[in-house]
Length: 225
Image (cartoon, rainbow, N blue to C red; front, top):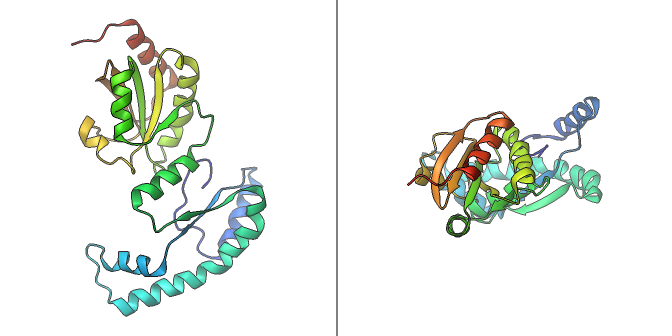
């Protein structure tokens, strides 16, 4: 995980891991956070076996998982040795439900200024909608590249307007019913609620001034019924 970007399945061998470190060092980039999703072997095999469209026979799946497990050992040991002392190596329980794993990765990927706090689930969102006069919600995901461009803008928005509006963010993967509920057509999507009602949604990456002007407008205008 580098600056919130999740590099899923990379590196897959020790040579790639060392080469990646060289690239980061050459370009003066920060060290990544290494997240090891550790799941029980039997559970992992069962998940693969029950996937839709799965055509491999069980012995083949077992052999593939065993080979991947063995290939990961030197990479995991390397990262433990080089990153654990700097708190950059983290182990996540991959046996947990997908929503919980996704929420954990979301928290790791967005530990920035903390100005725009995360919304845990739809129940918390409903509570905010009932309580807050003006609520701004950034809907994003750890795998969404363009979301990383919006995140610092939303953080700045929270710093500027935090005393007059609630500026929050919510993880799409852990709350997959949100897009259907609010008619979202893409990500990133920033939703603006006035007195509990959705008034406007900005989809895609916009200049900071667009987000700022929208908040300022809703702070000045009464809600349209």
